[in-house]
Image (tube, rainbow, N blue to C red):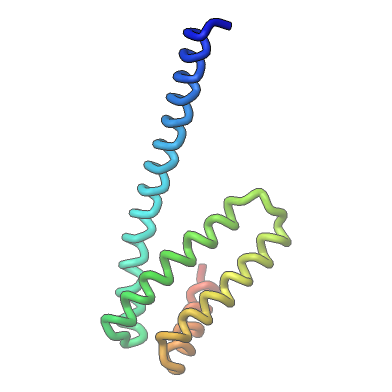
Length: 122
């Protein structure tokens, strides 16, 4: 194979990889933006329901984004159902531990209670 053919082949491969990487970054940013908008709305709703401070609301918004992304990764993975359930349960435990760091006991208990009511209605 001539040097020119090799260079052309490498150039085409590099362009294909660059296009794939760009599309993944674009899709990820778009999804993250959508998640951020939803998290802002949810955090404001919880702010009213739980009487949160501004700082707590911002921390809750960050937690919603972080744990939503983690849960979506598990849900969209090729893991079996039982493995997905176990991973989602572990993520939920981690999420609750995170929330306990900035919510007081009453706020956390109300969060759990209201969240269970919302889940049952869905």
